[in-house]
Amino acid sequence: MTGRCSDQLSYRPSQEFTAEVVVVGSGIGGLSFALKASRQARVLLLTKKNAAESNTNYAQGGIACVTSEEDSVELHVRDTLAAGAGLCREEVVRQVVRDGPARVAELVELGVRFTERENGGGNLPDLGKEAGHSKRRVLHAGDITGKELERALLSAVRASPNIRVREDMVAIDLITSKKLKKKGPDRVLGLYALDGATHRVEAIPAPMVVLATGGCGKCYLYTTNPAIATGDGVAMAYRAGVSIANMEFVQFHPTCLFHPAAPTFLISEALRGEGGVVVDGQGRDFTRKTDPRGSLAPRDILARAIDEEMKESGAACVFLDIRSRGTEFLERRFPAITSTLRGLGIDPAHQPIPVVPAAHYQCGGIPAALDGTTQLAGLLALGEVSCTGLHGANRLASNSLLEALVMAHRAAESLPAKLARLPKPMTVPKWKEGKAHDADELVVITHNWKEIRQLMWDYVGIARTQKRLLRAQSRLRLLQQEVQEFYWDFRVTADLLELRNLALCAALIVESALRRHESRGLNANADYPRLQRRAEDTLLRPGEI
Ligand code: FAD
Ligand code: SIN
Image 1: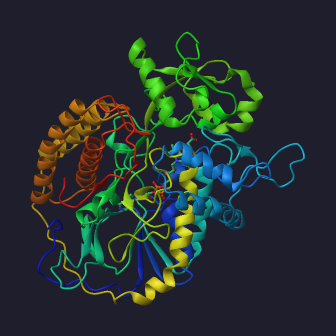
Image 2: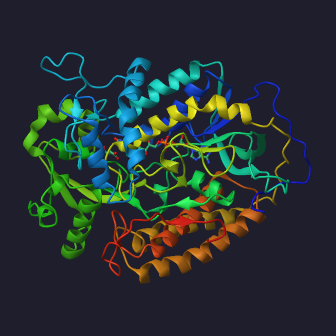
Image 3: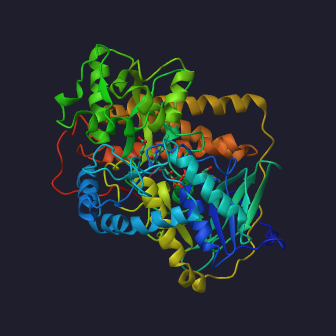
């Protein structure tokens, strides 16, 4: 039993707002789904910080989608499959790429303001270019695409009478029939969530829970992800008995700003699409040694080239040089990046930008169909938390927002059939409180958190070996034991809950990497440099960690 259920079945659904569906997460996946689902059902949306806080909010490059006559579904499919290094599911790739234009059109209808072409381009969107794309196909809102998406989606969600948004609510664990030792096939019955305002854990009955909780970039010391990215959804699903796929494929973005005052700030790949070149401290382009596409090689290849260069030279960073485009262009095309850099004393029109690779995206996750269905009845997974087969062993740039949009739509489309089969919400057991915690223990939580992120960076980064992975595994086992003790002995806090999830996700990444005896896409292992003939998913079943 992983939850802290009490024997009392005392919680009853709130009289004020009874929802048929509970959504966890307010990024593009959760918000898009809630909005569409609200036309057919009442939706309770829980999110652990303020509603805009999400990976979505920081997206820069944009949404990859076929909208130009020079482009085609076939080309987008081909680029996605090539980046995915043989592990994508082609039928999934085709569906997502085909659905893209209709989903993007809906965003425009909703009020999302994509940047339009200049010089007589009419209302046509300006299309960015990113690594691995054979055509310009990335719709963007300047360099703050994610903020614009969150703005438009959140205002529509807040205007819907059928959606109730509760901020500062940390989902802890799913309540399932198996956990409650009920007969019959296992299914979701609800979830526990910590209310940050009252510090109380609520038991929320819900026959359908939609996890849209994003990724686990915070497992690593250096990441482009904001603090929310602690892998909560993957951890909750695994503890509820759901298998987890392909967690070894952690994508490292090649160009995160190297600056102590802004360690997670991304320097968008779109800069490279517009002529930016990655160079060493002497201004030499070293990237063509490994791939003729140089700075526009897919992320796995470029991040590895940078990692090798830094290890060989001992340099703390490399540089992205976009001086060739000049002040006027940079201010117009990348206003937010340019002004942030200037605020830090770096003028990108006159100086190369110091950059390093950093953990960016979780390609694996909860195995899910494109309508979010998972192996556990009543549980849906949408967006980065899921693993549909679109990204394979390495995600193509700007395909993530697209995937979340397509999934949210398909999940809402299939909702009536799912709702018709749902059991009525039932009473679920109250949460069992632990003892009050003391200050000393809270310090240990911070230490453990740092230790995990450091060891993942040192031993489970861009270049792996079995020895380093085993070292990480044995340390993580000890850390997980400690975290479990805290969890059982003390009253839970948001930090402790996130640490518990982070530790589990780190262990899932390490175990998955240990099981993949090949170097494919983002999983580069010096002990297994070759590709296996057959591309297979890594599946970790409950109880294997
Ligand atoms: P998120 O947007 O991460 O939202 C997750 C939500 O779940 C958040 O609201 C969070 O608070 C909430 N949550 C998490 N755990 C809990 C819990 N336990 N209880 C309650 N709530 C919880 N992709 C692209 O396609 N194009 C880009 O240009 C692009 N740029 C990016 C730039 C940056 C800096 C980063 C970090 C990522 C970028 N990505 C981009 C990736 C993309 O932004 C994400 O993959 C995508 O936004 C994920 O959406 P999501 O809805 O699945 O999750
Ligand atoms: C970027 O702007 O470089 C991020 C794009 C992505 O992660 O898809």
